[in-house]
Image (tube, one colour):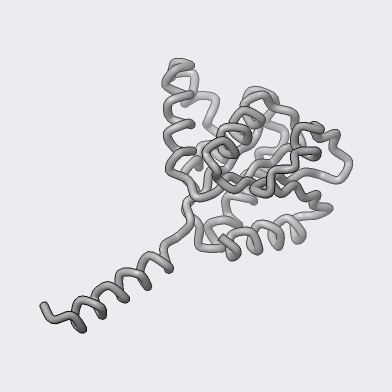
Length: 159
């Protein structure tokens, strides 16, 4: 293959990779409480509309508890950590306190994966999230679903 042809092929590969859907790890409370399941579903839908691939779609699944009842703790951990390591970013809903969500946020930051934490303005969010100086962590309050959608979409487009 001639040098020019190689460059053209190489440029095409770059363009294809630039158009690749960002892989997102969606994080939300499971055992800490599922009262925001509707919000998780909205976030999932927003991510898909923005062109992202949601690796941890199970967070927005209303049947998740039934599915996870058939899994061991080790299987759940392995699944979630495996998905996290394949992710380009983590988006966490942190209104409902959750040890698991906090753990996932920490693991993402250790792996240098960008994190967007979203919460209701009246939530008591942990200082470990709001006070974290890591430039890869952004914590934002959303007063309504329109704001939530805008924040998520802007984050995805900036990846």
